Every structure is written in C-alpha cells, then in structure tokens.
Length: 283
Image (cartoon, rainbow, N blue to C red):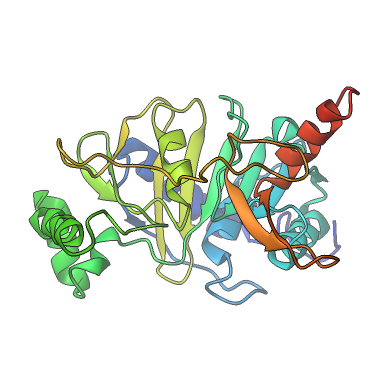
C-alpha cells in the first residue's frame, strides 16, 4: 500500500456514504440510488462507478479479480488492478473461484459465482428508459409509477421492423417483478446469470452518479412477449479454437499468422482452465 493514502484511496466518510447507498440499493432491488460520485485518477466513463464501490468494500483479507470484456489482461483491467493493489495491498487473482470481489466491464464470468463473492459491474449508462425518454425527470416518474408502456412499445416496434428484438448489449430486465433495469453492456448471453444467482451484483455509474443492485436469489427476467421470447446469442456450432468450448460466449478474432477468422472464449480465465483439462492435466 502506498504511504500517504487512506486505505483503498477514498476517505472514510466517502466510503461510509457509498456503503450506505449500497445498502439502500440492496434493499430495493433494481432501483437506482443517487450518490456523491468522487473524483478518481481515471477518466469518468472508464469505470469510476464500479471502482468506487470496490474501494468502499475491499478489505485487507479480500482477493480481487478485475476483467474487461472477459479478459484479465486488457489495458482497463490491468490498470485498475494495479491501482487497487497499490492503495489497498489486496491480493490479486485471475482465478474466478478464488476472488471475493470481482470488478467487471461488460461481462459476467462463465463460472457460477457463490454466496461469498460480490460482482461489481462498471456501468456507463444506468438508465434503461433512455432509449424511449430523454428527460431524467420523466424517467424517474415512470419508474416511480411503474409506467413502462413506452419500453414495451419500443420492443414491439423493434420486432415489427426487424422481425426480432435487435437489442444486443444492455438488454432491459425486470427485477423482482418491479423495476426495469439496465444490466450494463453485458451481452444477452450473460442476462440469465442474473436470475436467482447465489452472489450479490452491484452496479456503479460514476459519471451518472447512480448505484443499483441485484441481491442473491432475486428474480431477474428479460423483457419478452408470450409469443416472442428472449433469446441469447447463437454461435451456430462454432467452438473456441483454444479449448474447444461450445457452451461459452465466444469472440471472433483474426489469427495474425494466417489471417483466418476463429472464435475464442471471451472469459480468458475459464478458457485457460479448459485448456489445461483438454491437455490431460489438472488445473
């Protein structure tokens, strides 16, 4: 830990205030709670909301994992890990099962999380109704009254126009039968993982100054019609060229040496474990 800084960088009053707002968010699943977003040494829009939640929760005994688009070694993930380690001294891991706090941008790990883990999601745009209503005053009123007719109409018109629901990332969900929530820009593949999960999900938007949560064992249902159901991405029989997986979210990449387009697991930690098993050894 760097000398001269308060533990985990934020002052104690700031951390207490954020933890109080987290408790309120947990008590009202899916509801956006305003908080006083602090200044941090990274640009707003690059994870300040999630980072403030992590810094407010992390302790000396915690083990941290940070991922970006499923990758442990992206620029965003590496820099956030270095910063948190330098101001808290917390242990860092790439193994999902070993982490107590996982901060992520745009993905939920493939491995099912447990009751002892907290997943913190970085959120650029927390308001799901922004697709249909530009006014913040009106979206707050709509949430308060449970008036989501515009969102249902938007999805209906999407189906009429495109023959399917074209929303990819940020697919809107209903939490606990009450609030429509933006699950952050995770792919549709990850949306079912929010439903009745064992772990706590915390969402932080630093630029928008909002925190919201999905507690363990909470109903999270994607918006869908009885005759037009929600569907996850279909990879049409493709498999990861590294580990052979056909049941994970895949990214399409170009191999430098051949120029051939191949698919690879987005979750790099999960992929490495599968490769070890594939090679006939133990993880």
